[in-house]
Image (spheres, each protein chain N blue to C red):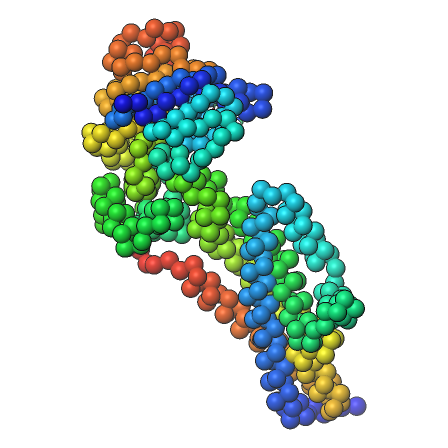
Length: 223
Length: 244
Ligand SMILES: Nc1ncnc2c1ncn2[C@@H]1O[C@H](COP(=O)(O)OP(=O)(O)O)[C@@H](O)[C@H]1O
Ligand SMILES: [Mg+2]
């Protein structure tokens, strides 16, 4: 038996694929911007002196890191409407991505903050800065620089994990693939192309994150 | 007149009492060196003077700013007290001039142009006018320490604390830093230094304070103290340090 490959059956749906890619990119962008923002706040709290806030944030982090992303997504999309909190598939998917990345990046950024030499903090305090000023102007930038590679990897993981959002009919790339193969019955070709597209997206994302890092932590050339 | 006044300062870490009632007065324009063996409490004492260590007893006053146990207006105190550390502690993500500008902009709310001018003047003062744009890791230890001094000066402190600021430096870089301190002393800056540079202490300081076991054992003019130590501990200490 010889299977005859027909990739044109997939490319006939290239507009669907394109829509899927677009939504995956959007979900990733929203998830990254707000997720990392949440992570910075979370990490600030985790390294603060307020015990109550620390307990709350670590409960959040542990809850998210020890439950499946799919279940988190279902809870937001199917569970929350019971409380009158109804979201579209896209909104639910975005929120789930933000909450998920927020938890992981809290942990990652916290490690970066904790690596701050104590002397730098004392130098800031001795200049009359308060704790918030020390965090903003002294701690956070070198901390982000330290953990940027680890955070970048986590962002890529979350981008790939967004495939799960097809399960609530968020029309991202995997949803597009499912849709196409249900129409053309070309499962191999559909998922092959999708695999390559994810690979390309991941490589592109790593590149973009590297550029963003270079820009944010740029150092002028030797004076 | 008296600028820094310590009365019965006590400080413990757990059950370990490191400062056992320190009385010390430093007058405006005075240069005071704290000397003594490692572990005698010199750093701890210096750190209490700008509130980096909480005190358990006694009172401290700098230029009218009071500090007692439990009572803390650290910000007001720290605005009057500058500090330079053994390990420089520059901010690695900021250039030399940004290091110097940061606190005036953030704490004193100076506008950036004004702060930049002040910072440039401070860097020029420590001989680093040409290093404004350099980052800490592009500077030698001696240069980093001079930036750290400029950073403290930019806040226009009434008194500058220096904790073994040449101890982390290669020997050939020590003098460029000491010369800056010497210049500040000549200009009338009030200085409290922890130092192992005995020759420097003898030449530059008005007053020498010998600490031992969390107490001030002896104090007085350097020549006098070195020539005729009153206590066995100080004569032992003087014998153990080199005058290079
Ligand atoms: N953070 C700290 N926690 C506990 N003990 C400390 C701490 N800092 C200093 N000490 C102790 O206080 C004593 C005095 O230390 P320090 O002031 O650093 O002495 P010096 O600067 O004269 O060498 C030492 O016995 C030291 O072990
Ligand atoms: Mg010390």
